[in-house]
Image 1 (cartoon, one colour):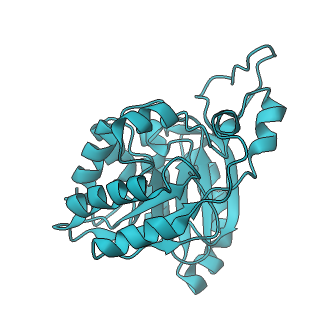
Image 2 (tube, helix red, strand yellow):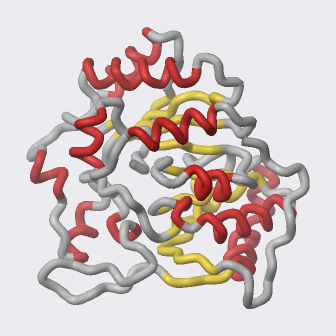
Amino acid sequence: MKSSAAPCCANSDASAPRGRIFNIQRFSLHDGPGIRTVVFLQGCPLRCVWCANPEGIGGPADVHCPDGPQRRAGETRGVAEVHRQVMADEAYYRTSGGGVTLSGGEMAQQPDFARALLAACRRDGVHTAVETSGFASWSALRRACEFSQLVLYDLKLADAARHRRYTGVSLRPIVRNLQRLLAGDIPVRIRIPAIPQVNDGPAQARAMMELIHALTRHSASFAGIELLPYHSFGVNKYTQLGLPYRYAEMHPGAGPADTGELERAARGFGMGAATLAHCIG
């Protein structure tokens, strides 16, 4: 997939796409190079049982909570408005080599907004990145990534049955879209949320790295592997939303993730894996 050399300008009129956003996080250090602003887009087709951002799962409509009222999540905003907000930290981007990252939720669920916002940032010379689960139609993912200079691609599990059990969706389109991105010219960094008792054991770690090695060994755009250890910072959000925290129900008392197994498995296939200080998962 090739990115245009001359990003078009984002429209500022009423016809410009609008996006549903639930958070804008400044001064992020783990979502691409340098100091970054991360724009979290609402809506995700996955239902990862460990998700730390349940407020970002629902779509553009209100979030429906069982046995409780509807709760509004996120707000609709225009490209020009969000662009102005993220460009307030332009000086930090330029001095640190940072920029703007779109995350979620799943940013590919809002491809027109994602494309327009990234194009506006590229127009101003700001580095752009996206984080995606890859679970989207190829046309939507390609459009959302068109003006990105880095793709952070979340890969949860290599086992199809376990993937469906823990995320609620099929692994097949995620792998297929990853193959397509790796065949393009945008750098792709694979991120693995290391979840205790889910994907950090020896068998799962080896299966994951075997899959990644097979997918990336002939790819010039492969930009490495990052491991993001599980944390429980989002647990209180489930209580506030009136939602069950399914990971704790499935694995009560789970300890910390063993990123060492994933690191060793990566080395076994001649690859490196860097462990970060948090889990986006």
